[in-house]
Amino acid sequence: MAEHVKEIIDRESWLARLPCGNTTLYAMYSSVTDCIVTDPSIMAVPVDDHMVHRGDGVFESFKCIDGSLYNLEAHLERLKGSCEQLGIALPVPLDEMAEIVVQTVHAGGRSAVLVRLLVSRGLGTMGINPYACLDPELYIVVYELPQTNSDQMPDGVSVAMSRIPVKAGIFAKVKTCNYLPNVLMKKEAVDLGVDFTISLDESRNLAEGATENFGIVTLGKELFMPPPDRVLAGTTARRALEFAKKLKQERVLTSAEYRPISLGMARSAAEIHIYGTTLNITPVIRFEGNPVGKGVPGPIVQRLFEMLREEMIPDSTRLTKVF
Image (cartoon, rainbow, N blue to C red; front, side, top):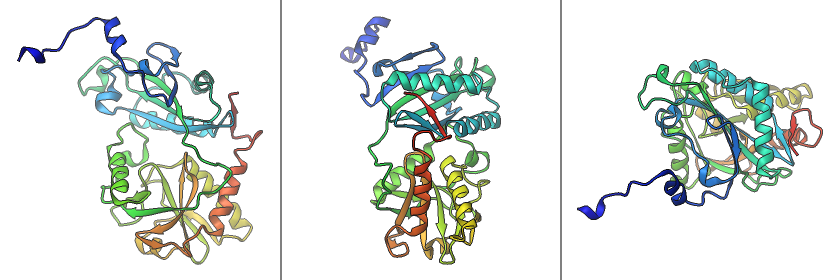
């Protein structure tokens, strides 16, 4: 029995035993230390942070492309709204937060990365009482952006229906750090051999994916997205809907709006789209094992993709320069 007794060590010995770390993590800011580190082995969050053991926090994910952050302001505004919904004070004003983001991305030394921004309730308790926490904390992690050609639309992905229950009430609309249902949806997609799964709400209308929003184009050239009162309002989906409204003005579309999407509407759609930070705007070409439309990306998704791509070129008003 004695051979299983674990050694008690000091701080320096503990640090020396840490693994070298994930080489796809490039930089981290922590308000606990109020500084930036680029050594992955010491990128850590205290165990008594309420975000760690209770999921009590909110987050945003966005990207840096060609040395510039895309749509940073929209993500920070949504973060602020999430904090307000949960009664978490902002650790710093949004303009200061934006500056810390820029500095952290710059410290990572790479011009194409993903950024995870997290705000937690704070440290100080292993219990459940949020009022026992100290001040809220801010963490910013800069990490690898999967290799994608942002100038070329993907060939298309496959989607199946999810059996994971849709999030209810406030949990559907706030980007909290409790992502267990989302994790299970991704596991489900891998187990089913498809790229993504999508959940249904209580009325059996399309809701959302693990980290993605969905929309359809009907045979009558109507573009619909699930209303944001039942799903997390994605920043990319919001931009796509704004683009779609321009296409309506051009008479390319007959409608562009939020509307409940029944399973039958999805099955008969001319196009199905996925909207997300990493995915941009991606066509779904197989839904529940059957081809969507002609089984190839349709004309509307191609137009929307081009409109989004043009927003990511240098000098765009939606870019925040880092390098």
